[in-house]
Length: 84
Image 1 (spheres, helix red, strand yellow):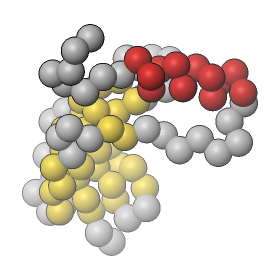
Image 2 (cartoon, one colour; image 1 turned 90 degrees about the vertical axis):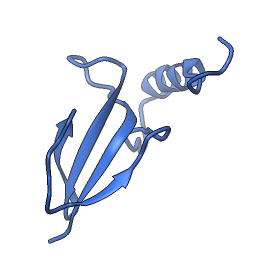
Image 3 (spheres, helix red, strand yellow; image 1 turned 135 degrees about the vertical axis):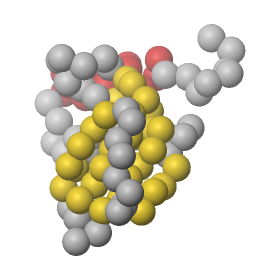
């Protein structure tokens, strides 16, 4: 089973007990997200630098209210260093 460590991504969490967006590492074990945090140590994993990239959860057939909230959130995110 392959393990991949995505390092330094900006993740849109959409989880009530976490910030809306945070920079974290994501460890993927095969087809499963095995861990989310900062930093993750996984010496046996292939490391992929995701700095400056955005990861969002896949939303399939999202409820219209949820979709609207997600669209507002995405419009409010600006790349680092851009005018606010």
